[in-house]
Image 1 (tube, rainbow, N blue to C red):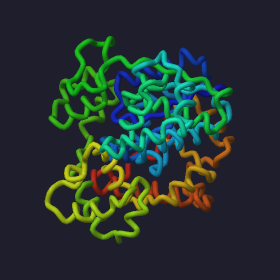
Image 2: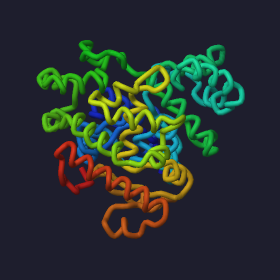
Image 3: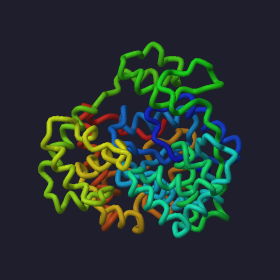
Length: 388
């Protein structure tokens, strides 16, 4: 069976995502489109606005054939780790031979650019120089590669993720076996207002979330598939609850343990400890050219979930698991495909109990993430149904 992979968050699923799934299915000629989706928390270090079971259901009702979970150790990490984790899961599936993703520059040669990035010796010294001047890592790397063929793909988040997918596939030695199918994004990812040009421009997920925060659900009905519109008003805004939990976690965690948090470097644990004792928001206090708000958010979440460097390193190399979140009823055959991969398929409690070593530790991090997500959002329980 030929599988086209899609790596996603769907926070929430919107018409632009539906368009990408249509294009992926059409252009790949695949027998099935399998999505790897973030669970309770996103790559920006925030709680997803809807639980993973609901978001996976939306994806399956709108074109995906199956959705599997991206473990939280990867979903709440940098773009590089997010991509490497998702690619590891897809590469474990039999028949995975193409990857589709949204991109601002869909005509770019992502494999060629990724090969440039993988040769860090060519730009690492320049990157260090820009880092010392206060640039964030992403900005410092882009400045270092200004004269290279990779530069045009280093300025927007979708392109950067596409590059990280290509880098991860190169590390897995899959370039000859996996075709990249970038789909041009229709719309401006920076735009904070809803799109008004119909199918010529789709609203970004961030503009949709902003409209939700304002309670503008009437305007959202034209931006979302019907199944998403039906569920979106139950979405929870959990930011303040999560921030409180993260502040308490920083205060309780010993400094030497805090220093082992996955995304921490250069003594940032000291600044975190100081910031947690102040009344101002921790992220606001520590955000700078060097440390983006997203990175600080991720660090706070990783500490809350006890995701340390050793766990992350182990999860990037050890056998893990595949956890289906949703499968189209007409494609029940995919369950056997998912079960025949390199990693065990986790569907029931008995499957969870069979996990050992790193896979078990990774799954325990997922369970903790689910419990904390329920505590900060109020989403408890939910459907156990997988087939839609």
